[in-house]
Image (cartoon, rainbow, N blue to C red; front, side, top):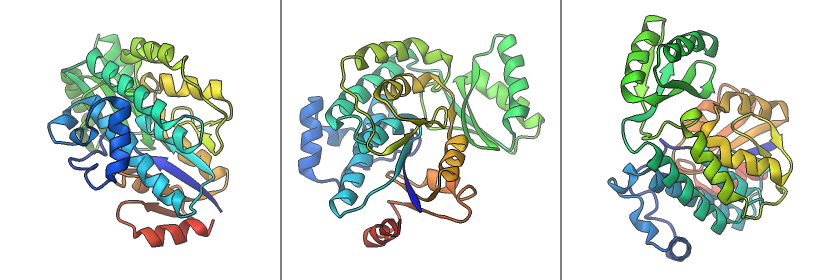
Length: 301
């Protein structure tokens, strides 16, 4: 039985998520970033894309290192959106300090590109084939709406301008969508609107060392196994402007023999998405599972 370690994306954050982490660890993060990171998880601070992304990286890696210190191991890693960065660190392909600096830049670039009036909306109950014609028509009419995430066959996410997404949501309901929900994300991630910012990040990333992953790294964008540093560099830099195929990533993991998924903090959104796929396996979230129980579960691999 292979184990997949997964890291969540934006929307999983919550105020106070860093407060219980070790002072020495937070102190190191503060030194690297040149600011007190314990201030990043206040309700007000989390309105910033940069703060959210840094909190997700910090919380996810601290939890994984805590598990590793007790002998836990995994076979595969994957991350949804910003989760790709802690996944790359966990795989041994990217140094944590470099990840902190890159994520800081990534979040700032995304925030500065569209500081207000844009975001993401979940569309529930429609499949990609049903949604795409609506998107093409909306784009032909000049609306800024794009497919961003395929989280599950009938759980899709669009990105774009607020008013355009609102109008699109009504059209989706008319076509049979059972839910339209604005997400707690303030940028239009995973679409062409962030292509210039991805290119800027790629330029900065060209000076950062990346290594061949020690754990098998599954791309959350194309659901493929990435084996070399150059492919990983491209995936990390450009995932902000590429559609996320998380449903395909889970299927790819299952077909490769994964029967245990462990979700790093915060939250358990990815745990819920995995249950219908790992039908004869196990899923667990770091939060909500006793630490000793989680270690025992991972030892069974």
